[in-house]
Length: 627
Image 1: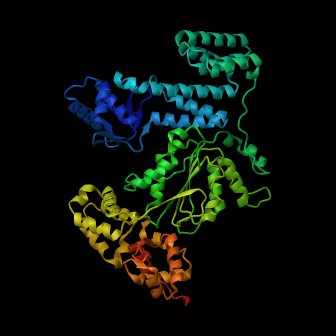
Image 2: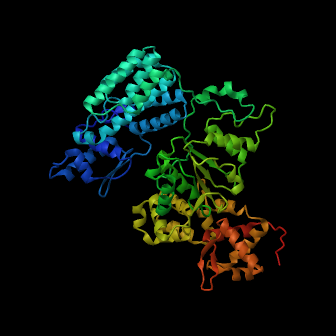
Image 3: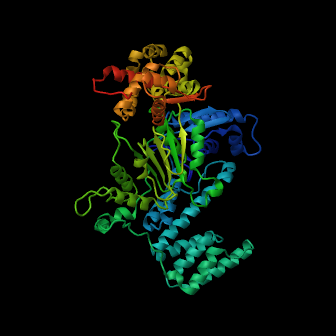
């Protein structure tokens, strides 16, 4: 479904225009689209439909307009009643205003970096989305509230596009356009300054000076003010001849001695790189983690007072056991704050599917290609692969001064991460890892624990369906208990129920209740609890893995290091060091401190099952326990 706001409000399904009639229906659609997925209250809808004089039947009429929209827009668009109003959800739909803002943001960034051809093209595409005055078929109340902001966005994009064209020496063709624009908007000083620049570069210095004096008179007569910085600086530049010089475009990066070898081959790609967006899709049924989500978003998004200053360093780490939802939270946060990072959203997974660590050179080459360096994966002139130091230098050069969000998923250790951190504070970094990477400078850690019962039920219901579980509350509680708060397990259980509409939830609960078969049931498609936890266990040294297998005998109850030492036949200090290493890699939970001041530990129920299953299936191998 495609929606148009930059012109008459319309909805289209492919080539077919959806038949909507009346300014009121178009107004309701526009208000819900402008809310960008947020709930719009009845009172706001009323004020934008009728102003200060709503009818007594306003709620019934709003309901009627919503019903008409539901009927005409079909199943691709979800219009839901959420107190205190309505919400429009249209995942995958195209909204011309959103696309305009994206292109305008990219064009603005390209202009700031003096990539003038790309800036001009992006801004021209953004302006081409306008099909006349925005919101031209809505009520006057909505037009009065929203149109000034939209028109200002259009004019600002137009001025930036003209600035890019002036930098590309297109002054001859700009003079007629700018003459018309200055006549239409006589008090917009930037447009008048651009007209003066174009006239001067066409050899029409006297006309450029006359444009200034006319502008000064208009400003004094209509607004009672003197010309501002744009006009006065341009006037002085005309008098001194400084407008003859064109701004210099960005240079082709040459961070390596042999980079010029590739310059001609890839010049066109360097000239117009687009801001990369590498994020995985957001999880539509994401549930819970409200406090962590709020904290991470607040730390990534600058406070209003900071928006005009340099970005502060933001390196955020999300830790937790395998399957606890680190990546899902990180991706959701990244999508939520995407507008703060106009230069791109980078993503790299730092482990292979089998759990082995990815080579840092390969990851850097992937990120550099996304940043517009197509030679990153090519060998040096002597045929040797690029060295890690050279790739790091290129990466830090490419990221310097750019407002990027870099999501590094499943980091193994500080050494791997160090090569992937940008050298300046402009870019923000969001890292997920099972390990608590305490040595990362300037980082803030958010630790994810397994979900509590309420969150677990909410996630299961979001996937399997509320009505499905409402009739079997006992079975739903059993499923959440055996999943032990692990979002991966809950997602698998919910997916199995959703894909088997005839199954009662009690059937799945019975199948999960048996520990001997539980791991086999917690698998669907590519989601597999046992495989995910096995990958985490694989990184333990063989002696520690054997100690963990012994520790499983301790059962589900929390324990202290003293009792673990007896079971493992280790000195108490050695046992505590081992337990702390398990905590660091998120294979053991610390539940609190006992009355004697000693830490208490507990193995997650599903970790115990996976370790026990591995012990039963492993082949014998020599092992010598420390005495």
